[in-house]
Length: 355
Image (tube, rainbow, N blue to C red; front, top):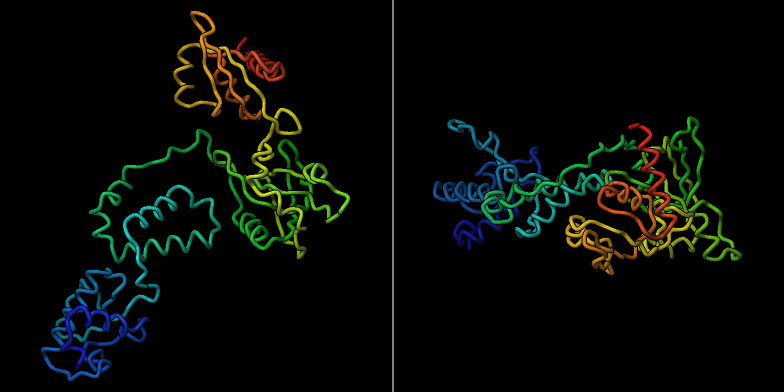
C-alpha cells in the first residue's frame, strides 16, 4: 500500500523518518514523494504539504525547517524541507521540562561549561517541540513566578579556564597543581592536591581535597585528614592537571563524609566539632528560631519573664559566629565559653569604630 494512501499518523511517522537532517540535503515535496516511492499527483502533494505543516506545528518551526522560512510567501518558488540536526523525538512531559528549567535557572553556574551548554541546547530543543502546550500548563506558568534573590555581596570573579581544569581533574581522578594566592598575601604559592570536589557556600566556590602525599600504609585516617584543605577558587591563579592517579585512600573521603566531619568550612578550632550551644534569647528571636531551628535537637524553654533559653547541637563554624554576631541584639551566648568569647571580641572590635 502506497505511503500517501496510509492514515495520517503513519504518514507523519514516515515523513519524520524520511526528512533530511541538514540544510544541504533539504528536499522538495516532489522529492519527498519520490523517496516514499509514491506517484507524484496533486492530491499526494497537497496531503504531504499538510503533513509537513502539522509536523512544524507540533515540533516547532525551529525543528521542522522550510526554505524559504515558514513566514515567507512561497508563491512561484519550490520550497524545501529538512529537520534540524539536533532535533530528536525524546519524550519529555511537563514535569521533566520544569525540572530542567529549574536546574538551568538555579544551579547552572555550578556545572561544567560543556555540560551546561548541553543542558541549554536540550531545553531549547524541547521548547521548540512543546512550547505551546508547556506554556499553557500549570508548571509552564509557575516557572515565571519563582525567583531566587542573590547574596548581599556579589560573587567574586572566577577564571573559567581554571574552573574547567579543576572540574576535569575531579572527573578524571587526577592530581591537580595550581598557584594559590592566600587572602591578604601578595605572592602565590604552588599547591599540589588530590581534588575531591567543589563546595558551594552562598555564592563562593571552594575546592576541597588533600595535599598530594602519596600512598603510604603508615598513614592512618587521622594522618590523612591532617592533609585536608579547602581553597577558594577565585584565589587560584593558574591550574594544570598532573598525569598522576589519585590514591585509593582518598576515595573514602567523599563530600558527605567530609561534611559530617565538619571539614568543608572553617571552624573556631583546627578540627570541626559539634558543640552544645546555649543562648539566652528574647521572645522575638524565639519566634524566628522556632520557624528556622538551628538543629534537629533544638529546644526552647522559658528562662525568665523576658527571655528564653535555647539549646542546640551545632558545628562550631565561623559561619555560626557570624550569625551569632548578627543576632547579638536579640541573644547572648551562655555556652560554650570559647564561642561566647569569640562573639564578645568581635562585638568589641566592631564597637571601636563607633566610639
